[in-house]
Length: 322
Image 1 (cartoon, rainbow, N blue to C red):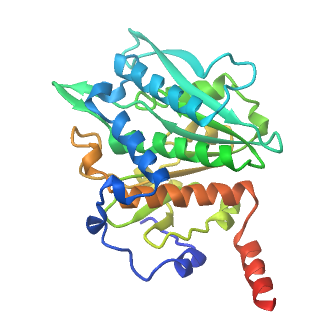
Image 2 (image 1 turned 60 degrees about the horizontal axis):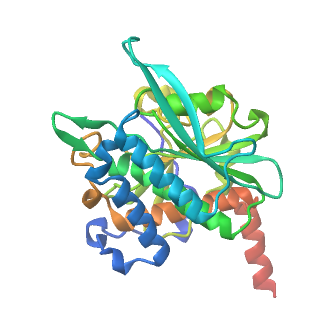
């Protein structure tokens, strides 16, 4: 049986109960401008026009064009020594008979140091099956939209760390994009302090967002301060004794973990629309999603600025004395 840990400070900063998410399916107009863009990115990437974004298809190409446009709109730079945002890689399918070309989309914001935090989410999904488009709104247009939101935030608020934004391809085919990123050492691996990966963060009826990675890297726990009352940030799904409930290597953080690079993977538990044609924009929990993205951004900001539970506690004590 897995153990689910909720940091006391998070509980103190949260309400006693999570609001009913079914009552929070608001229209886009009721959200802030930033959150409207977050929702728009999911809606567009998970529309039928993108044909499920399967690696090597026209839909994947369209998704890359959209991500590139957003990178440029935000003002992100291609990685040093790269002329564009794409990192091309090839692999054979599971049968070993067909070669497939995938393309990661990479950009960065230079920080005050050359220590790197890689913020990642895969943009591919499973495409069209039996005439039905599997749009993958939660899996994983949601993660890509959050990545773009964080890029916009840190472009306006210069980070201490250099931030690399990686929209990985071919996760659904065996983490091929993230493996290529690591194997080709696109950035110096010894400079990477942390990988923050998002995969399915927009669909949960109980307000529960899981953070996997602190079992192996308990030093990361001190950064988990969230002030969003509608979100339960739960540490778990990373104990190797729990078998398939251990998510450590089940998404694009896996290749980072294989190199002993610390990681945090944010995601929700499987739901009825997981890998179904019903994983549509209208079925995500919009209020949960906007609050989940805000909580993750807050935690990334804490890590970047070395803002810990202890430092926040000391700040509160100083304010009381004034």
